[in-house]
Length: 165
Length: 172
Figure 1 (cartoon, each protein chain N blue to C red):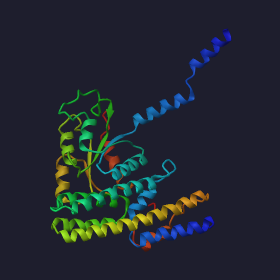
Figure 2 (figure 1 turned 180 degrees about the horizontal axis):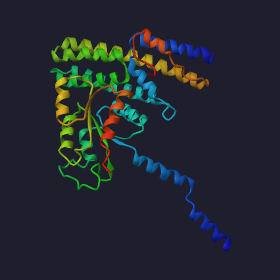
Figure 3 (figure 1 turned 60 degrees about the horizontal axis):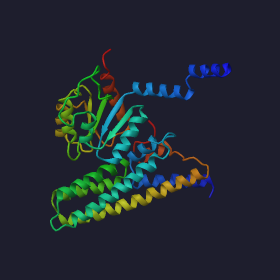
Figure 4 (figure 1 turned 90 degrees about the vertical axis):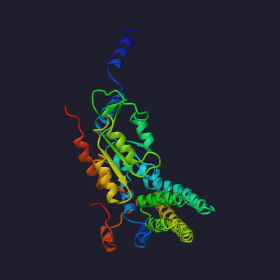
């Protein structure tokens, strides 16, 4: 596949992630912070997010598996995951965490177990999508191409503040 | 022999170009504002560090309120002897402290109160939180915080920071 084709594929893929709500404006902020002095910034932050999230999901699974669930602890983990997903722009994970917290408050064991499944699902989905997107970027750079910017008009069509203002 | 002597003299007079650059870099660094960033989230620390560096600030990140107190020399309730400038202690210059609110152990609010009750009290403190809780915001502002910011922070938020930093410049 030649570079132009790869670039078009990347742009379409990236746009779909925003349109489907996997990513929000905060992810754009991360991309804007990346520059020549730190060309792997997005990859680094995303990797940190993956490591951190997987640990939190493990902790949550264990915490909800106890005979006497400590909802305060569960809530603390979810709060952390909500924070980190919000910081990288993983919108659907963040929203799943918000719902999760409200059930923690109610000490509802069945609902929180369902929420955990939901959060895990959203997390693995966005992980997969981000890995695909980053891989496409890598391929373009390896082929000597540059990462194309998404046109400003796109952000307006999905009603999102984005791009350099 | 005389030739060698004169060569040595020429070498001693001129600093190596690399050394000169290092000296200039050091001086530049000392002139930049230094921000102490406190957050228990590794992702938020990385993000904050990048945001601050992108705005040309010098940054030190620590992962807890305790580590921040340690850095400021406040961990064992002792007040460090104040040196010439109110912003210099223990060889550290700190122009601004940015701290997350919800942290295990010493919270951002605890840290704020400790700072405001110490010789660092004139250093502006900005509290950050992912939650928009009005009572929390007023509590922090009443506790002496210069500003309360909602996470996730963006480049545009850094403009507010600059105003506080400029306010904190020592009087000449």
